[in-house]
Image (cartoon, rainbow, N blue to C red; front, side, top):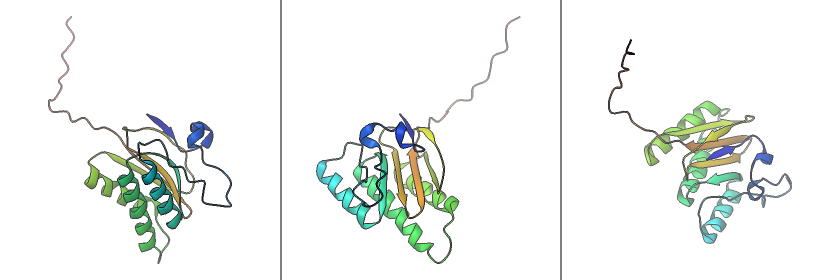
Length: 153
């Protein structure tokens, strides 16, 4: 699957963020197969944490984990200016340890992206002045060393 976080025009219509900034009802709960009840709970959580969900292809529990963990990281860095690289590293390590490799995380105030991700392994959201892109890719371990054979002359 390919996902873009740089422009809402590249998202399918049902996933495009509403650019109306006067309310939080424009949270996008998306593509993943979550129930209507989970959707409502996720929307309530997003509003309570002041998070704007932009796009998701991720199970409910993992989305909740990402939102709460990210919020906690920002709260703990409230005494100093948050470092986007450290935030991304912490989220990546948390998801690698909880859900297996290989998670990738981008945190920043302005970035573009177009990524390929594993099914049920994508979340894009905003919190405070930062945007968070979290996605998983499949890792295939190589168990045998491949030695190239010389060409026959």
